[in-house]
View 1 (cartoon, rainbow, N blue to C red):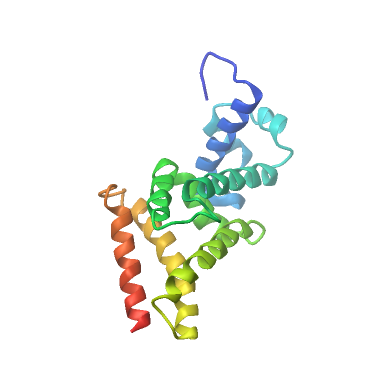
View 2: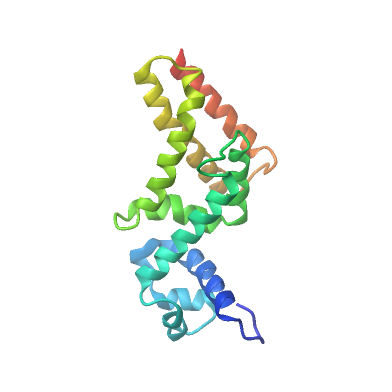
Length: 187
């Protein structure tokens, strides 16, 4: 947070959400206490309660914030393009903690999993028309439609975990892996 100046309520809330994303990304919802979030934010725990009624409400706000930023960055759901993968990589690069939290941690927590599931469903719906051109068999098409979003998300996650090598080439390399998977399934 900003030392020496008071933040306005919307700025404080945004800073709290960013700090909470970092704290929750390390341990997930259950293993992260509000004291850890407060320490990460450089504030008292009491100040968190001025913005959020509970840890669950704060976590929901973090997931909604990450989801909104991913949707805006990728053009989701109505304007996804082949460039959306580059945008997904860029969004992950800008907020690796939020990306990890959204796709890794929330997916392990049944009460919050719907956030990642909704985005994955939209990714599948977007991938299917593109894949239909390459894969005519309905079962193989379904398989590819399930697999391609997983490759995209896990490819970005693996890239983050590896220290973000070759950031300018990451999207192209993940696209190559996706193309190889499509070729393998369609063949």
